Image 1 (cartoon, helix red, strand yellow):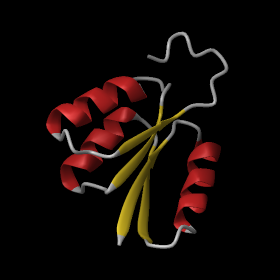
Image 2 (spheres, rainbow, N blue to C red):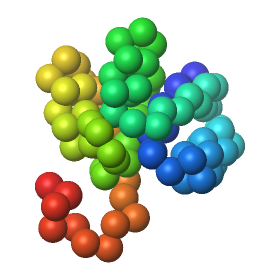
Image 3 (tube, rainbow, N blue to C red):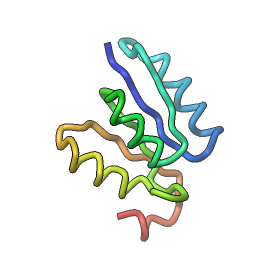
Length: 91
């Protein structure tokens, strides 16, 4: 079975993603986080099989969070998401 961690600073987006992912066959557990700091805390305690990560968030953003996760675990599976129209500052 698969566990997924959804990270988005928007409560509406976070809940919508959580609900959508929970309907995927084989997904056993979906947890959520509101920011990069929370993801890193959760990752240290309970490593999910997949992380869905918002790119832009206040505080520790998605890109830096992914860098830290991959530094700690190069095999981490992460999908980055954004609804931003301006992608200049994303990379």
